[in-house]
Image (cartoon, rainbow, N blue to C red; front, side, top):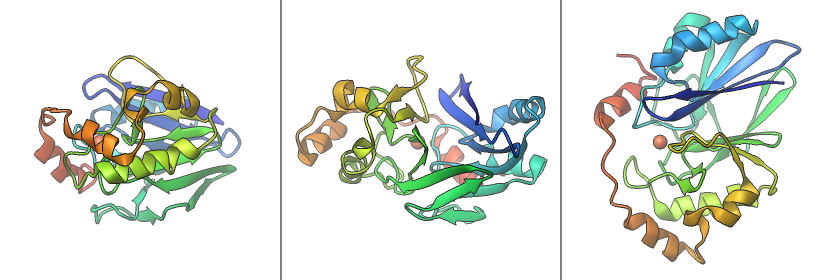
Length: 227
Ligand SMILES: [Fe+2]
């Protein structure tokens, strides 16, 4: 298996490239439009063919590179079936398995940050989008977010995975590369709650400012980045 984690400085987004060493087929999770040329260069350097591009959800803080990658490589676009983006070619259901050569990736519906948020599990690697972050969790105050749904996605789905599951989030603002489910259960301040009401209370009092360009980003992301 080939694995690369790429960081976008402007939006603090992590993009992931996963490929099969044997068949040389690759997928990219959560690409950022400004970095598409660098992903293509990386694919060429590693002698890989991009077959699928996945967005974990409709992002508010950056524009997806999904459509641009599709134009450049003829890959398929994929999101969870709850996506409001009509342009997505493959829509997967909760628990559906995505296969690329010998690699199997399980789609997990994890709403809360947004109503269309999915996480993706490949062996011990969990790509959690913005549902579970390192020492944090995704905000729930726009895009049909719900703190109650987020609690359920976290406590009844992601935190039920084995403690040694490797966590690769959609963002990190503090220079962390990865974590584990066990570490997050123990140290993530948002997860030290006893019930859903306590979680809703924390999330209701974050007082975060709106991301810049949120409306423009969402409307472009509904078209997978097309203008
Ligand atoms: Fe997000």
